[in-house]
Image 1: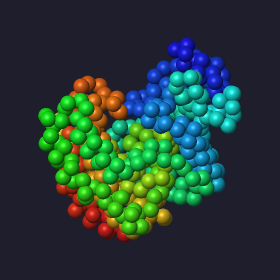
Image 2: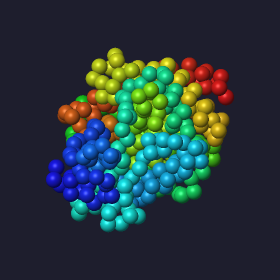
Image 3: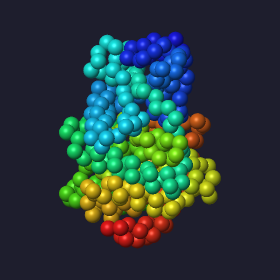
Image 4: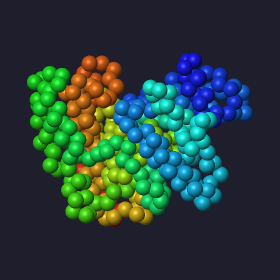
Length: 362
């Protein structure tokens, strides 16, 4: 850990470092908790940025700085008293106070203040989901008037047409020689290709605007206090212009899944309508101030889009030889694919009920 200690010291950390240990289980970045000695100095989170995915680290951190600064100003205007617990705080480097990242010659690093007495969850109940709906809706609403122009940190991240292009290329190349045994999965995914590109079609017709969205609204990308209320949204790497479907749909994909993202037992994987109802109520309560009717009416499509998109991405990565996502075993991406397809099919079965629920609230 000596190397991590040396890296952490490049940031404006208060106090003396006691230890640095791994934190969390993120698929993309490597994260560590930096504990300081004594009780009068904060602890911190040290993170190695995966610059193979986020290739423009300067733009990435500029986005995050603009967003956290804007959210902090909103909290100040609202008279919030616990601002440091409700928005992330990234530390400047000691060499350059205008930078929030350090390059060690091989990797890029950043440090943020650790928020104590905060919890994350992988599965939430309807009450937590309602809080989360309000939080993500407010996150979008608060950023509607951000003055800066944000960069797409991962171009075409939630562009379904682009993801299908990647899948078709993976099928054509079959780099890992795996296609022959899973051709049925490829056929099943491609059968839904046209209907799942609705967002891009609506955008071209001028009927669907791009907003500033989080774009990775997993349940564990929020911090909750011990009373079950959301403190703040975290993991801001993917905050960028996108459709509101991104935040709504990806939350549904994780929170409303009765099984795990990589559940090998497909009988456990189904779409939880109670979570959908609760999150939607909270989301419309806060995001309804700016959403268009077209956006609201297509929220059920968003719920179907994201398990489908994730299945496409997992499957393409599997065919390519597991080059993007971290895997725990040889067929991990294939197991993930099957679980996401099962969730997608369950969402489709519940779409009439979702549409009816939405219609009552327009």
